[in-house]
Image (tube, rainbow, N blue to C red; front, side, top):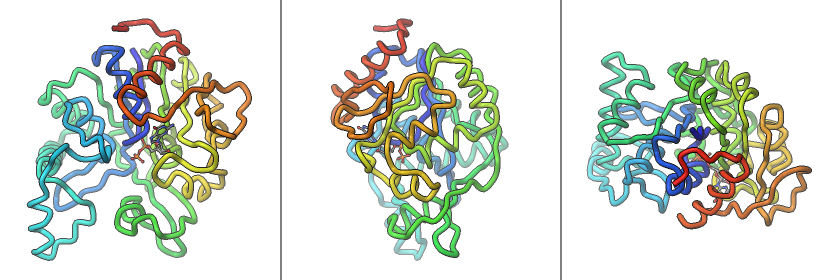
Length: 302
Ligand code: GDP
């Protein structure tokens, strides 16, 4: 089994490639929930949503969020009624969030709700929230402390980020720890270290478990810029340079192999160079295959 630690863009692109090499039943994805938020009474878990939509073949891969060809009638009607949903929620996307909100209100854990919704959609992979305890990524900008979604979506990432924190500490679920300990290899895809991977690593129990299994990490940086998103400004906000060397510093305590892009000027001694730019599904598949070769995992390969 291959287990990924994932956010909502870089790692899902790699998972997309892996799916065309190994069967879904051999894939587990431990997903960041630090960006979760309740909105208009429903539960948004942006990274879980992206991974579920990917495995159920409905993801909008032009943006890597939301459902392909979704409509926005409810969102537009709510705006007319004065409800400020600063996240654009599609109609079918909202149905999914209503269903999850209901399950949670009825007392299901996030792990149980994710399993129920995954099986409704016939998903064979194991999609696992990092924790069943709520912990939110908070950004401090001057004297304001805000939810990551408020920083990135509502304020369009235009504010300066002075610091990043989590609202609470959280424990990894038993299912997550099992998915790591049973893995032939764990892959940290090229996700934002600050908002996607560190929240997972901070869940109690995860790093200890990662030390016992082969771990490969892929850098989301080329030079001093991420391929997309706010990883650069947020690395600075936690006191690190926004590059592959600093990313490796965050992971080297437990990771065995580090993959950098062939174009990356940063020199991380001992790293493996691959073309990590996944601009189409074929490139994702090629990268996933090369990563599988590096980890020497042969199980279940198609
Ligand atoms: P988020 O939850 O939407 O922020 O998504 P992730 O954290 O999973 O992914 C965001 C990171 O993916 C960014 O830091 C990007 O630099 C990285 N990324 C996106 N596409 C690619 C790609 O094709 N190759 C690499 N190496 N990184 C990528």
